[in-house]
Length: 221
Length: 221
Image (tube, rainbow over all chains, first blue to last red; front, side, top):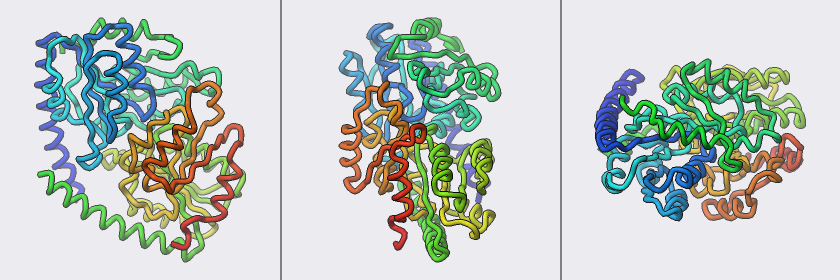
C-alpha cells in the first residue's frame, strides 16, 4: 500500500517536472526571470511583491496561489501590474501549486511586457516544496515571529530554496528571536542557502533583495 | 482522472473517520477531553500548551506532529508531562496527522493519569483541516502577525474549528492589525466560531482559555 502510494507520487512528480523544465526554458528564452515565493500563511509574500514593484517597476507579472479569494491579486492589480489568481478550492483545496497550473496562468497572462514573473505559492511550508513550478529561483520567506526552529522542522522547503528572506525584522525589538540561531539552523539543513533580512515596512534589506533580483541567480541554468 | 482522485480520497477519509470516531468515544468513556490544535507554523501552539500545563496541572498528555525533529516534545517533557512525537518525515513528509497515527500514539502514551489530551497538528492551515483526528474540540490558532485575511483564504480550517484563539496579542501595538476585521472575516466563513484573544507572553486571555477547557465543550457529543 505504502509502496503503491510512493510509486504513483513519483509518476506525478516526473510529469510535473517535465512541464516545469519546459516552462523554465521558455521563460529564459524570452529573458524573463521567474521567482517562486514560498512561506507560511502571513509571512509577507504579497507585501514583499508590492514593495518590489515600487522599486523595480511594472514589468512584473504575478501569479497568486490561494485556496480561495482573489484578495492578493486585487492588491497587486491596484499597483497597475497584471496579476493572475489561481484558486485551488474547486479542486479539493490543494495545498500547493503544480507546474501545469502555472503554465496555464502564464498562457493567460502572456509573455509580453515583463522582465520578471513572480509566483506566490500557497501559504504552506510543506507541500509547495515538493513541486517544481518551473522557477529559476525558489525563495523561502520566514518572518521573525515564526521562530528560529522552522528550518529544522520543515527542512525540504529550505533545501529547495537557494535564498531565504527573513521578513518582518521591524518586530525584532519586541520579539525574543535570535537571528544567529536561525542562520545556524538554516546552515544545518542547507549550507548553501543565502540569508538576507528584510522589512518591507521599514525598507531595511530591500536594496539587497532588489540587487539579487537584478543579478538573476541560476538564470543561465 | 479527477473523479478517480476524488473517489480514492473519499475512501481514505471514510476509513480515517471511523478510527477518529472510535478514539473519540473511547476517550470520552475514560473522561479524557481531547483537543486538536491547528495553526500555521510558528503561531504559538507549543507555547500555549506550556502555559496551559502551568495553569491546569500535569494531568495532560501531548502528541506532537512535525515533519521532523523532536524539539517540541522535548520542550514539553521539561515540564514533567508525557509528550509523544510523531514525525511524518519518514512517510513522505506528510503535511497533516491522520487518526490512525494519533491512535498509535495514544496507545503508546496509555490512558492513565490524564484528564486532557492535546494534539499539536503539523503547522499548516490547509491539510490538517481535512482529517478528523478524533478530538472533541478542534482549536484554530492564528497569530496577529499573520493578517486578518486568513479566514477567507483558508476557510475549511476555520469551519471545522468551533474555537479560534488569536495569539501573540502582545504584538498588537506594533502591528497594523484589526481584531474587528479578523472577527468579521471569521464570522463570514463560520458564524458559530467563538473567538478569544490570548497572549501566552503577557497572560492576557489565558483565564478564558482555561475556563473553556474546564467546561469541555462538545464533550458529550
